[in-house]
Length: 205
Image (cartoon, rainbow, N blue to C red; front, side):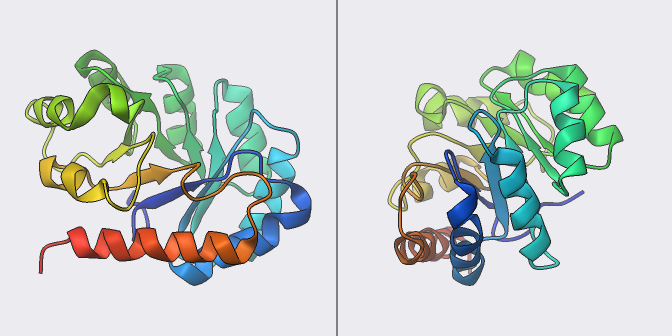
């Protein structure tokens, strides 16, 4: 199972139901195809339901901060297809994969990375990215299976993406630099376009 391109995840922490569709449309218009609504805020499942209903066919909409298998079932029932966690919980990963959802758990060590892959994870979220750093990621990638999707998350800016891509990052999760509660949709679109342009500038050829 492959993630859509560009492999940039918009982390919409604190998204409210009233602005969900406008923010979602702004992101889709700017070229984003992966949207994550963390579950640790009110209204998250309803936002996922709204975004999933309006998403382009090639998009992946789902949840972040997924900590339990019951959360996985609730996200699937809302139409979500993406399960992102801050941690490596093999039970949640296995349940996500068995449910036909895209699993991207958080890892920060080789032990967590291999446990996640063994459980069926489709991509590995490097979290917190600032703690692992580009040097740590380069070392981690030297032992991981070739082609493993790696998404640093935490403090990512358009300016910092190139250094991560250089050591092997294949995508990113982007939160507060892209969206915070109350950010107008047009501002989200402008920021999102900046991230998409920076991603394209990092790619060979």
